[in-house]
Image 1 (tube, helix red, strand yellow):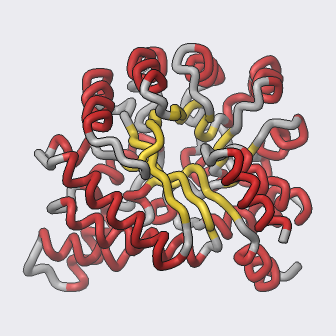
Image 2: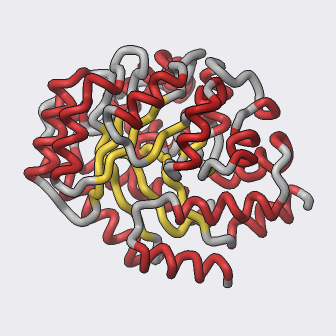
Length: 337
């Protein structure tokens, strides 16, 4: 298939995305607006230069600092109206009919924002996107490794006080080296006791022991990234036997350069061949310059997946989701159509 044929075909293919960060689908246009609002008086050239500095990083920790710098440009929960408008455009542009999106409130709460106001904004925008497009969105609140256990516990308690149908669980993102999964066992136990789903980034910047901790200690239902599992045959067997899905983000993994230097050597090919339930995701479109359709194209041209195999991975995105069985069946029916 030519690139044009591929993108056209895969855009209309019913797909889900399960590893996507809300604050990272913000558009460059919105970034420019936020930046110039905060730093008035700059010329266009000066603004471009300063914004470019934010996006100059070479490792995972540098990326996290850039992520926090972008969050610092927000002034109030109303700014999420712009972000959700950008999310809507992204989902439509990539033919995504269902998305489970991470929202990271920690930096905003530290700025003194009211979490209830944030949740109201989330809910209103998600309902509007569904009304306008039919696209279904659910949120996972990031309790964050970066800011430690107390912050994670606080985020969970705020969530429990502000439960809405659009929020279905928690996720453990942030710095994997600073915040080992074992520190957050109690937070994950409490979340599950309140019928929240739990997922964890693991094996992105730390070895397979991090994935084991996420599975054994935090009992994460899905693993974000998980690429260091390639170093542990028993772990890969466990992922297959227990049907624990991996939210794989190839371009993001190449960027961090911890375990993958280029797309051709990405372990998703081995994971798929072994029967692990892998899904394709973009992670942070703004920061890595890649969208979901790009990841499918990269998997086709750089990693060597066939079109039929990519269709199976697209189906996996629904199977691995937290949709109800009836909802999964409906989306898979639409997929087959």
